[in-house]
Length: 252
Image (cartoon, rainbow, N blue to C red):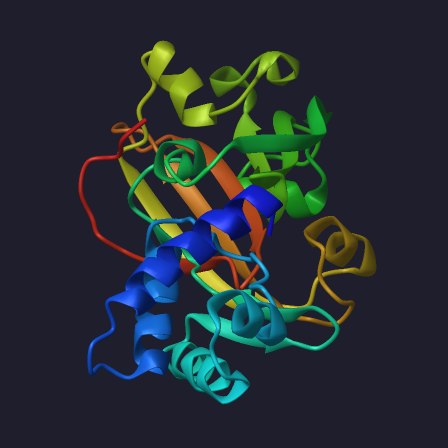
C-alpha cells in the first residue's frame, strides 16, 4: 500500500476500534477492512499491511489481528500468497452480455491497453475457420493486454471482417465505442469459456507464474442482420474476474 493510503486506513480503523464497546475487537477489525475493500480503498490485488504493522499501529494483540484476517480469508476477501503477504481478493464482476471492457470497468480505476497488434492480415487457416471465411481473406486483427490501474487483467485477441474495421491502426480505446460512432451495433453474442494454460510469454504478460491456468473466453458478436462482427479470444486472470451473464441491451 502507498503510505498515504495506509495512514488513511489506520485512521479509520482506529476510530472504529475506539467505539468498540463490548463487540470483539477482531470482528471490528475485520468489518473495517471489509468496508475498505468494498469502497476500493483496498483494491483487488492490494497487499494488506503486515500483521505486525496492524498490531503496532492499532494497539491490538497479534492474536486479535490474526483472527480478524482469518475471518476475511474465510469470506474469500483476502488470500495468503507466499513471499507477498495477505492480498485483497475482490475480482471484477463482469457481465458477459453487458458490453465492452471499457464500459463495464471504467468505474473501477484507470483503464489502459498495452497494444500488441493493430493491423490488417491475411486470415490463416485457423482464423478463417473461426470466422467462416476463405483462407487468405483480409481481416482486421487487434491484440492487446487490458489493464486496470496498470495491472494486467487479460490478453484480448480479436479478428474482425475488414468492412467493420478497415483501419485498425487508428483504433484507440473501446472497439464498441468506435462502432457506436459508426452506427454499428452488436445485437447478438455467443460465448464459450474454458480453462487454459497460457504460454510462458502470455503468463509473463499477465504477471502470472508459468503453468497457472487462466479463463479462456471466446466471443462471437453479430449484427441485427446476422453478419459476423468479431471473434474475440481473451485470456483472463482467474483472480481478476467474476463472470456473470445478464442478457439485455449492450451499453457502449
